[in-house]
Amino acid sequence: MTTTPEGVSLGMPRLPAPDYPADVRARLEADAREIIARYPDSRSALLPLLHLVQSQEGHVTRTGQRFCAEVLSLTTAEVAAVATFYSMYRRKPSGDYQVGVCTNTLCAVMGGDAIFEALQDHLGVGNGETTGDGKVTLEHIECNAACDFAPVVMVNWEFFDNQTVDSAKRLVDDLRAGADVEPTRGARLCTFKETARILAGFPDEREGAVESGGSAGHASLVGLRLAKGESTPARVVHPRGGGAPQNQRPAEHPSSHDAPQDTSASDPSHPAGPVAEEGE
Image (cartoon, rainbow, N blue to C red):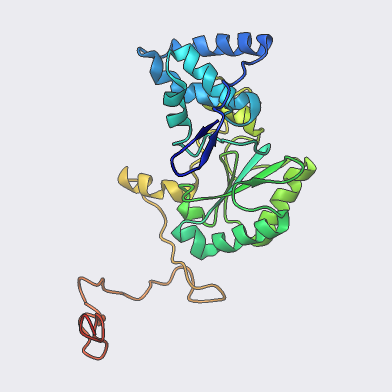
């Protein structure tokens, strides 16, 4: 045992990570060779290899990092630096279903914050924690890249759009009960380990998965269609609870460049900046 000059005990150094059982090691080595062959430089295969070892145990273990280091002739420190940098690699045991609630700006104001708080209470877990049955790991995600369907929840990277507190609770209850859960778009759900293997670059063997891929929704593609010169029918969205008919032309609202509005910087009644001088 080593002690620092300050009297802090550093304890014994950690023993090397154990190896996989022989049969698991042989299977992973065969998969690793297939992955490495895709790249001119073997170390470029590290990201998919981390997904591969994650598909074995549901998270990236020290044994998985050792395996990656050995097959790529890297140090475990080099592998650990990558595995701990990306949030997609789990560093502790996690659930069959990774439930990510977007709490970035648009989803948050549309209800994402409320959904995340409600699910924490409903499941009895905090951020990054897993339910006792090992089914669901809950986490908040900065952006699911689906702002036009806010608030959005993802389960193993499949989309569940336009969620509410109640629908999100039903979703996690169904996941824990083993019910058949269908994403809003994209392929049907599979477990996190199966997802990790797909992300490692192996074929998606789910029936109909390829045909149902390409999960961009209609709202996401409107801009692309306009850019291609395709016309889309005009549609006026009015406040909930009533409003003008759909075919009525909306009132003109000049942009701030055309008709600047009073702001704290230009309205003498609402001066900007601190009230007192600096230092007072």
